[in-house]
Image 1 (cartoon, protein in one colour):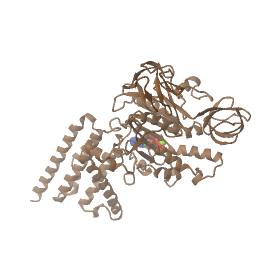
Image 2: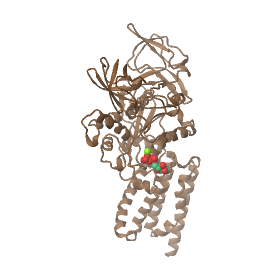
Image 3: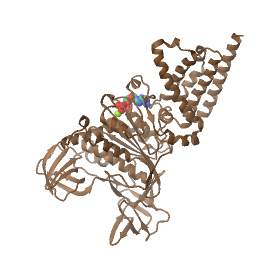
Length: 589
Ligand SMILES: Nc1ncnc2c1ncn2[C@@H]1O[C@H](COP(=O)(O)OP(=O)(O)O)[C@@H](O)[C@H]1O
Ligand SMILES: [Mg+2]
């Protein structure tokens, strides 16, 4: 057992720590605060402490647990809110009130709840099993089979395996190898800092459908892909993260609330149980795990929280599920790294961040992906990180380190947010590098037209931006109608399609079918308008057409009325343009 020598903010220097290893979890001081050894020189250890270190004194004891920082993985994870080291916040609050007292611990997984455990077909006592093999499952929710897998690092002959009703820590089987016997329960532990093993990684060819039009049409992220949304304060980073958590079609959502305001966490906690998963109709909490380390919580635990979130995601991925991790904000994680690095007196890199920041970011994003698990199941982790560059300046190290590794970039724009264009995603400089990989999926599921429409929309928005520059110089009157109509269609795309309210019940989520209807209506209007202009009809009379009003209200269309609305708008476009042409011909006879 060692002793505290010195305390420096979240770090404690302890001596007489001989026998401890790097990354061992230790209990620090008389209160037994949880910490992790992050530097070890002979018998002196530097420990990052996951709780407030105020009041600790030199001389107090430090005890190693001889285990690495790890999480408990078992049925009962879903619906929980944990802190950065997987302490269940609700349980802690029940014990000590909203101000969680220090040194308090609680099991991450409820030990009292009973689960019915079913055996996987083909698994028999006496057979050989290896790490990652699926032994059976528990119906954790109506829609989710929670597979019980042989823990990593274990293999051998299985005995005593049986179906039945078990508490999480009841013995369900024994794995024997030589004279080593390992008891299995429904719980397995995994260390958080290193990636979990899998068989191979694939390129993903399926998009994460988000119900957010600007993302689904223009800048999709693949299931198993990476995305980042850097933007200044108030540009809508958190709202996007919450929208993805609510509406995207991943099987499991891991929400990592990292260093941002605590009230945002409270909002999620009150809202989610009331909202329904659009796919299953079940409360959203049933597919969600929240790791909350908000700004009022200790900085070292924030550094760890991001790994806790990832390890939970990997566990569900290994069962063959698509998981999305939403991390808000990775900048706060980097700041935690910076603070700890400064206290360690490491040589600072750019802007005081440790020189290994880019490497840590890359390693973290590298843990995403679509993979074949050890069990043979195919699962994925999609990783979306909010980045909060000070002043919105993307030249800073966290933004740069992130943009080097992510393949989808949602550029949040202060001026769009100021003009209340939400989501404030700049359509000119955002990008998705997945479009080629996803192409076949779109063609198969939504038809050629969807892909063609996307290209068309991108072209119009680009052209609109160029024309706007010209208009600035010479005025709109100088443009011919054939170009002024592009400005008009660009505006329709922006206002009637890209703009989407997160707070309107109907608008918050748009199915792909409705998105296809909306965009094809606008482009059909465009086609008829172009033809009419070519025939000599003047722009002003086109702009007066009543159907424009209908188009601007497409977003209010309820999902079950899409077919009807699509037909109606198309026939209105047809009849109104026909009337216009007829009138024009009569006047010009
Ligand atoms: N999609 C949206 N629809 C409507 N309002 C939005 C949307 N996105 C952002 N907002 C508005 O912008 C505010 C700031 O967004 P927030 O996500 O908290 O910004 P950030 O996390 O970037 O600081 C929100 O409180 C909301 O009023
Ligand atoms: Mg925010």
